[in-house]
Length: 489
Image 1 (cartoon, rainbow, N blue to C red):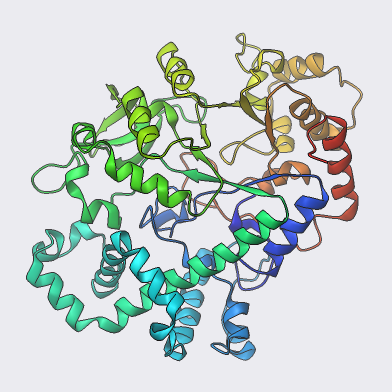
Image 2 (image 1 turned 90 degrees about the horizontal axis):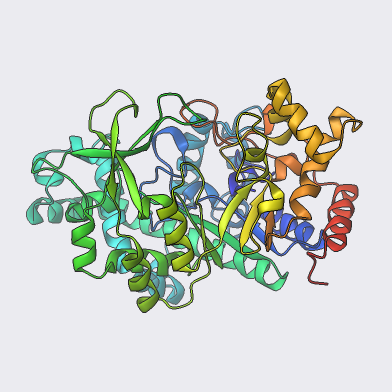
């Protein structure tokens, strides 16, 4: 359940009383894990996998009602802003304008923040990434939100004198972005503590790549495969697959892995350490890219023609284990798998992922048959990139639907209840952990889909209504969880 999908006021799900209530409902339903999407500030396309920083938090998730409680905003001021007309969808265009206005107004009244001990401690503890991030965001604001690759050369190449001029001239803007990150950190830690006290672990998500237009790439270009003009030689993507016949052209800069290896993966270890300050378990997105990764020529129209290059392999995990022992990681090992990828996951000692939807392809034997699952794995009915169960069932070719009906022996289940058969199949599998997307528990169709890969419109916007997680649904989930012996009680 993404944070942005939570119900509530002010245009988007956030760290609000509705989030606290959702945690209470999860506990009532016998659940012990809440999986979320990345928490970083989103840029073009609103994707949590294309963030302005791998360390910073998303300002959209700050609870404005808490700022109201602190006397930094009034109810009338919030009601005057346009948050969009549809409570079931995030309108990012209106959200950006309204959130920006509200946060800047609140900051203008928070004159005492710089003197608060908690604020000073946060700024000092986060200095290794915060200083660069707030400088990056300040220059973006000053440059009309243009990507850093389009900034004047002195700023693009981080000329010390040019950066010092920005610091002198834009002190208030720097302070605003620092304050926003402090608010994010304070509010998230409060919500995370609420989850911990309720017996709920948060399973976070770490994108394997960072965005080209990010503080990470701008402040550490040496870590990426860029030419002398700071232009990527090749960019990230995946080859043609079931999601897209032309592949997925993500466009992220690729890592200069020899540089990372020479530093014993210090930047990665810092990145992982920061994530575990936020969450309890972490999903490594696109795990197979650590064994070998798909590189596409910069400027190519799609990902049809690329090449596979070797990743850092087991050395990466050996160094991470030496620096951060015993991290609870989950490998997102979906997609085109090879024996080398499987061997790396097992050698690293990480559980992989199983997706129920992937099992029912009548054209070939599936490695996702539930009876073939390993115990050390995490099973899903689908992920944020899949259709909901009901949408998937509605679009299945007849042969695949027959295959699914035969496997589950559910020929007589009413169509509007079919999703429960697949949920039960996931719950009763041997996989140690089972994650069910909230839209599947709600039985939603296409309206509940989170993301459609290789599309740029309508993604990352679904929101649950306030009354959707009903007492009857909570009771049904709790009963199934106990019956399948997945409950801790």
